[in-house]
Amino acid sequence: MSTVTRFVLSMFSAIFLMAGSVAGQHAPFTPATIDQPMLNKLTAQFEQQHKTALTISALPSKYRKDYEEVYNSRWEHIKGVFDRKEIYTAEPARKYMTDLVDVIVKGNPSLKAYPLHCYFSRTSEPNASYIGQGIILFNMGLFEKLENESQAAFVLCHEIAHYVLQHSDNAISEYISTINSASYQQELRKVKHTEFRKRELLEKLTKKVAFNHRRHSRNHESQADSMAVALMKNTAFDLSGAVTALKLLDEIDKDSIDIAACFKKELNPANFPFRDKWIAKSSSIIGAGVSVKAKSDMDDSLKTHPDCQTRIRLLEPFITQNGSAKGQLFLTGKERFSALQNTFKYEIIEYAYQAEKYSKSFYHTLILLQQYPKDPYLVTQIGRIMNNSYTARKAHNLGKMVDLPAPEFMPGYNLVLQFFQNLYLEEFAEVSYHYLQQYSGELSSYPAFKEQLNKSALFIKQ
Image (cartoon, rainbow, N blue to C red):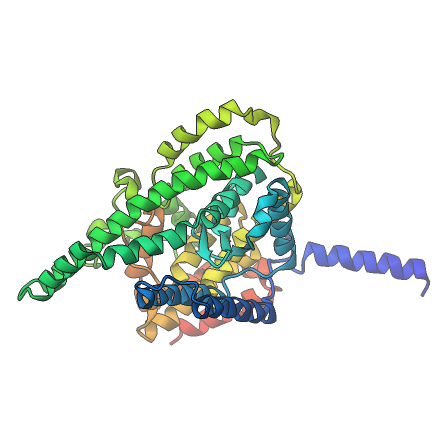
């Protein structure tokens, strides 16, 4: 065989693989492989850092035991992030994050004094956070909703500001000072000597401390916003990304799609049509009375990102004075940004499923199916979730994998939760089988699809 012939055949094979083995579809999504050795190495590195901080007398001597307890608790949270494989280890995403952080640090050399460890989190919550020890998590659920890289830069700068301004450490100090104050200890003694309603009074006292802490945290948000814009100003990013990001966060808790319509469209095969009772509100469900309260009717404090309008008003004058229109929306590449967003839409579905958070995985699968109808991975995912829910329900532990309806959830997600609560055991298998069966002609060559279809067929015979 000639070199030219081999080249032509290899190109043909590559094109065939890109087209996918499923007729009429691109190659189905395949989750990224987890780099467990890297996660183990990072865990050991941060654990040693934590232990060193506790042993070199870096903590205040006054109330030292309280400080050790709080910092140990924070370390357990950090360790949990790595143990749950929440950190996304795929090289393209890691390289992108490194490049984006480098742009910020290059414009602000003083940041070199602060070890920054920025990672994409595989969680669907539209958020980002500084969790201590220089670690910043940028949730996929937020990144995939952004409009441009300038907004991503603002989010990173905001979390970097929390780190530099020591908001986490200061909050810990404020908390320890509060619980050791004479007034708090006096109230605590009163509660301990109370004969009745002891638990209620203790909860009230705890909530009072939490409320004061939340008030200080909101002040920290405004401070972090201001520093974030100052950091962005030293880059070529468009400063307007700060305001548009906050506007997006202000609306992020609102449903962008009619979930009821999605149910009726997707779970409506001809031989097993959709039943309205599956998503009907039921007063027999614990918490159902408050589960469907509209997000718009809620107090701002229940939002994922409260006070955004106030934060915008504080930032807009500063941004206007500094000529936001002169900056750029993308610096490391729009194509890379878009490619990651598309990947993340799938990865959050897979991670929720792996973490046995079936209701979250189902919710995001249902939404993405509206963008990519008949997608092999997404269609199969509906079957996977229904089949596993059937098994879990049969074993009486589905409650661990499905949230209960609650006011802090979006109405659309609460509808998904109602669906899981309303289905009878056999209906999980029936929904799975009949939903998958309608795609058997198109997706029968996709092994994962065939596996779930066969599994649901066995379940409905049980």
